[in-house]
Image (cartoon, rainbow, N blue to C red; front, side, top):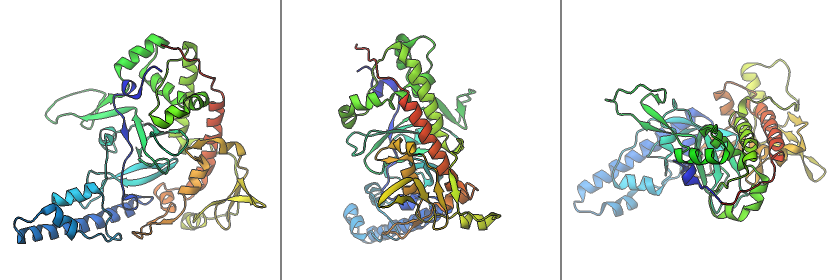
Length: 409
């Protein structure tokens, strides 16, 4: 096959890696700020404890002392190897939170604390999302060796390493950003708030694609083409073994097929990135009391744990029991065909939008808080209808893709 991920993209990275998900991710921004502050203060106390011990014991082995002295109470801190190294270096943590929006799982955004201290490994993500004022988007793909079926998903927020629930992921961003020296006067449309935006589609790739598919091909065309191509059922079937062993490689196809996959990719990028703004599917909702507003409506639409309906002993995926009093029906069976890893889009909604308590730390993550963050008591209810639309429309596009006509080099 022609072309690989290094030749096409100037930069790619693994998703955000952390062993402290409940501490730095939450549907509530206030909860993240409080949890990070609490953990940082406790960590700094550990640094001070180590400093005092070292001062009282000249010549002591610091690394060994740090290991012996550190407190492992899971209700106060969660250690990673990188945080332990920071302790050995006696590096203090900032107690304020650096909040951004993270794409934790498909169709599940949360507030996340993003910094070098409490994120275990960030890879190149700081160059892709340097500040909240620097928008970006890209797609996450299954990493090699993942135990889930190959999938890809486009996001416009900081992606998590475990996007699919387990196993690594790889993120291909549309752009990266590099800091411009403060003493450098530079006026350019690509420079925003001190950062220059760099196109991640390489010039060499554009040249090659124009040779194959025509001189009017743009870098946006290449990006959309790849995303559409990765949804090809023929590609996923034909190269299933390769996709399990390595990151995707994109072969050259017949020139007449390029517009088909490019157009499909443009539509899919729009659906998957802008899922919160698509037209809701006409589901049927029963059980919402009439005339409620404000806090009363938030309370009425509160979720605890949603579940599918049943017909006898069989699961009925056309029905979702939203709460004890609210039922959603009229969900098309077709929506379940849109799979992201081992779950459908709607499966991810049911899995993620439930109140969860992390047993080691006792931290509560309540999706109803995200409804309040969005200022919309119907956010989760509307999300079900919108992801249903995304699922149905995605499968229409995927089903329309032709079998590949690969051009051998």
